[in-house]
Image (cartoon, rainbow, N blue to C red; front, side, top):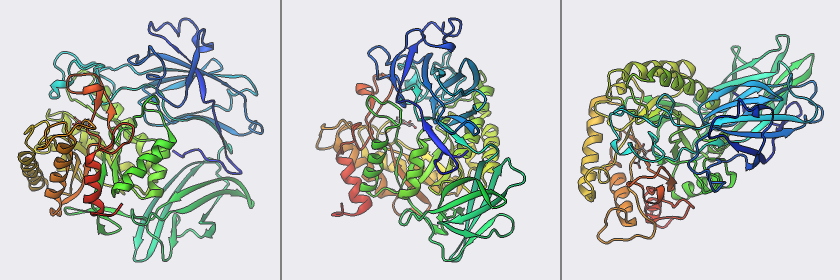
Amino acid sequence: MLYPQHNPYRQVHQLATYWQIQFDPDGQGLDAGWTKGLPQGRPVAVPASWNDQFENSRDFLGPAWYQVQFDRPWGWDRQAIYLRFGSVNYLADVWLNGVHLGSHEGGHLPFEFLVSEQVEQAGNLLIVRVDGDLASDRVPPGNITGGEIDFFAHHDGIYPQTQFDFFPYCGLHRPVVLYASTPGGIRDITVKTEIDGSTGIVDIRVEHGLSDAEIHYALNGQSLPIVDGSRLIVENASFWSPESPSLYDLTVDLTRDGEVLDRYTLPVGIRTIHVEGSTLLLNNEAIHLKGFGRHEDFPIVGRGLPPAAVIRDFEIMKGLGANSFRTTHYPYSEEMMFLADRLGFLVIDETPAVGLFFRESGLERRTTLVQQYTRELIARDKNHPSVIMWCLANEPHSLRPAAKPIFQELYTLAKSLDDSRPVSIVSFTGVPEDSFDFLDVVCVNRYHGWYFEQGRIADGVDAMEQGIEAVYKRYQKPVVLTEFGADALAGWHADPPEMFSEEYQAEMIKGYIERLADKPYVAGTHVWCLCDFKTSQSTGRAASLNTKGVFTRDRKPKLAAHTLRALWKGGGEQ
Ligand code: BDP
């Protein structure tokens, strides 16, 4: 799925910054005819979560109705017009001028409708009903009752009752745009790259609906012939890597009789990613991931897209010497993924499948949703050089026998959609995690010295090391420690270190990283997490925050940030 872009053949029109919203706690909107206009809307900012914008909406999870009006941009009368949503959490139903266009389930992934027939010249009315309620047959799940959960007893009774550790923000979280392109024009482009010595090979597939059209390719403005039906050959190529994130502009022109009908320009990074034995190789050289898990979580904006804060997060990661992150626990914004390409980050790209459990009730529905998310994520992110691995789930409660065949099928699906990247899941068990028998990389989260061996960093580091060694011994694949960390209340100090102090967090993170540094099969360590973030209320989360950030929620460094900079960048370097 292509990201909308502006050029002489395509136009993007951003809808208003302030829409109208009306909450519908009694679920009466449909019967009361709100699809034709909201009786008592009030202004709301888009994109943003609704929860922190109003006095009375923090814990309200829907349904809520959004409304906006727009006119058709000039010159669009003969164009194919699409209405595209970057992310709506969780369930969206969309009406345009009273016509139900369709619905989409699942946050964090884009969806669009062809609306050329419905769009009038002026006064178009767009209505979106958003339902973010938590349910056991949704993904991620929540409000689970009756002993359905195998693990995470502390998640029982938290409020809101999520089966995951972040606040279930709701709303229109990413840009909503109209875009226009040539009817039958370019619908999709898939690029895969290979390396042969100093030559780069770019394999391209273009989907379009104009059977009599020709396709022309240019790289950085230079026209290139296609070889073997689908390949561009780039002599003396600059390969993409974190140290040198070289991108080429690939321009695809759809032409007829020499006239350009449609154009799309895609940034392409030429690089390879492979697993060989227990090593992860980028451009045929071993790589080591240094980085973080993180949340799209900001005061007031909630899980909405704040462009400046995204830049800030890259800045603080770079400043520490990080080269990688995992999109915990859902796909990050498309805007952030393009920046990752440009700034040279290695991304483990995760679907919104967090908190999965494998008891029967709702299992079929959850499984179908996770398959849908896998398809949608790969369709969205397949062309990013920064994406080095697909992660199909975080910490599934997978000890039940049903889990393995479900992941086997999911793995096969992911590989059939993209055979060019490793595929994994992130496990909190590791041994046994039956699915690691077939997954390409072993990704595990470890909290020794925090949830286990509490208050004892040295014992925790020992236990972590034993666990990692056991995982490697069992599966003989590259191992990524995808989460480890400790809560630290900014400004709270203790010597000797005590839990929740900045010293404890810093020392534990240092202990983990140093202990794993000389294990060649450890392909990376991701600290949990970059910044403090909002979560459900419970005794385990002071101020409703998970404070395992090495930065505060407003991006101020804790001691651990300085420790990481010294570890990753070396002593004096800033
Ligand atoms: C891990 C989860 C992560 C939590 C973290 C924690 O993957 O989402 O926030 O624990 O407890 O198990 O801080």
